[in-house]
Amino acid sequence: MKYRDRTTGQVYSLYDLQLKFSSVSFPENWDESTYDFANVDPVITVLPPEPAIYNRVDYTGPQFINGQWTDTWSEVPKYDDPVQQQAWIDECLETQWENVRGQRNFLLAQTDYTDLPNTPISAQSKQNFLTYRQALRDVTTQSDPYNITWPTVPEYVPSSP
Image (cartoon, rainbow, N blue to C red; front, side):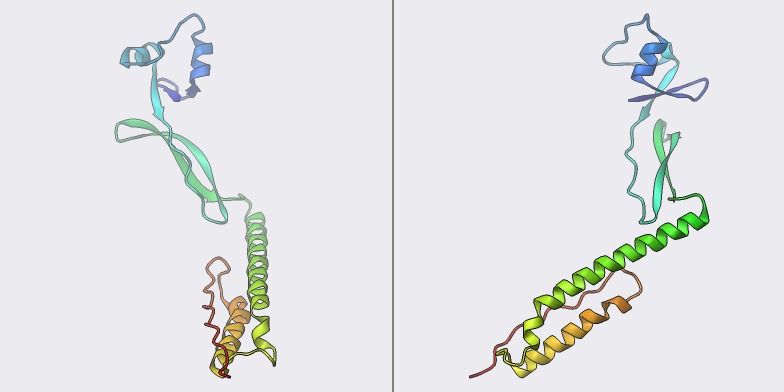
């Protein structure tokens, strides 16, 4: 739990308050008289939100929201310097494209057998797999590596004897 000093706005932990009032024994459960004595208000703890891909979340301190002092957070770019931020974005994109290519290559390897001349597969199924495999190769032409639309694996239909 955190506590906001009513006079200065400084935020204290319970440990900080115990040090500040070292000769005082605070009760286990605080009421208004305890807050008044220490001249603080409780701050409602709020976990930070999950930031967008290229950002970070900074603690912005307590704000008075709906009658309670509440932790607040602000989402900002990971780096303050625009050049560093762009380098970070470029690095993240390249890493994600590497992941996409790795997944694509894995999926291609899973269907390599359909391209062999002696695979007992129907002509329509073979054509479906050729289309699927081309769609896999084309995933790197999509614009956003974080939102890839993956093609659906076609059904394997054996050739008729």
